[in-house]
Amino acid sequence: MMQTLMVKVEAAPEQAEALHETMHQFNAACNDIAKTAFELRLANKIELQKTVYYRIRAQYNLSAQMAVRAISKTVEAYKRDKSIQVEFDLDGAMPYDQRIMSWKGLDRVSLLTLKGRLVLPIRVGEYYSDRMNRPRGQVDLIFRNKTFYLAVVVDAPDASPIDATAVLGIDLGVKNIAVDSTGEVFSGDAIEKTRRKIDTIKADLQQCGTKSAKRHLKKIGKHESRFRRDVNHCTSKKMVVKAIDTSSIIALEDLSGIGKRTTVKKSQRRKHLSWGFGQLRQFIEYKATNAGVPVVYINPAYTSQECHVCHHISESNRPTRDDFVCTCCGSSADADYNAALNIRARVEANLPIVARIFAQLQAPNIGGAHARQFIGG
Image (cartoon, rainbow, N blue to C red; front, side, top):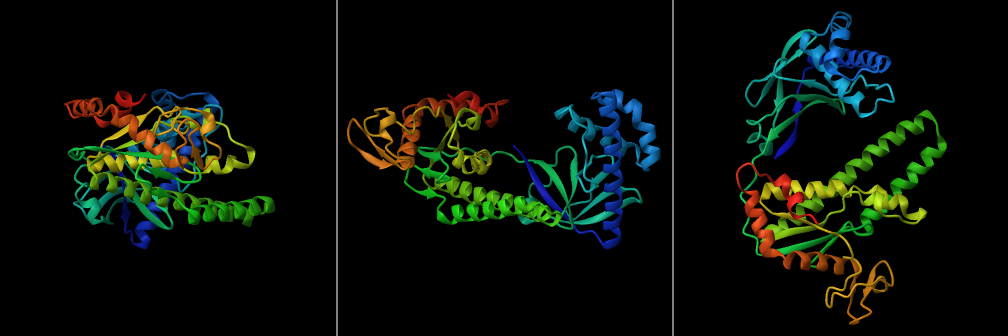
């Protein structure tokens, strides 16, 4: 499995200045190339390189490989939306490949700049150190919060799968981020309070409309993103630890495209669309893969309307959003907990098949990325 590690570059002031100058010239070249690509409607890297290569090298004082990387970065961005001219921030990420960078052990890296090669100290945490001997392809030089980082893609080997004997069903929702089949609720009033506070501040700033308000709005957006990411990391970690402790498979609903398939009241749209459920599922999957915990995706149809006791399905079983009362057998439960039990039951009913599928996934040339293809339904 591929992972991206953020490695801090501890550059001295004069080294940081050289990196800044190189990054600014590189992204200025990208903007120049983007203008040409848009005017010529040219998204072919080879043809665009024939058109701009020598001019870009001379005008922006870039090395041969830097010019090639600038053309590649521009083409990749332009291909995503050919209807607009791409514009790059001068502090945007700058890709480095093996021709213009090299590792000098675990404590230094050599980067090419407009002022020549710089050998820079880097800080690699203990968690990263055993992965840094498996870098793959190019890295990105990133400037964030007045600090330079290298985004390094590494090949992290999957852990040996655990001997799973049970299933941990997890229902993802809006009021509660998640509820599992043991009854544990992941979310709560503190998270909802923070979301409402951020929404109120953002609404006031949007209404103000001044330059200062827009800068503050951007800052608040970054704060919200960090908050959401932290909560999703902590939540997914707790789920995976519980699965390990109970020797369980993690069972989730396949909610791909759920935003397009479902509708909510206008007053609930912000709440429905604001949380990163896709990010949470991604975190669960990669943490589980690292720990050797199988992850199963099931068809989400009727999990919220089905009774976990008698399996009667009806819209009337949900008198309110939070409550489940079966109109057939009369059993009642929290609605999210009932859905988590149904998710668990659907996987338990097919546990031998699931075990056989994951055995196949351990065979040569078959990876965990195929789990959704084999198991999803």
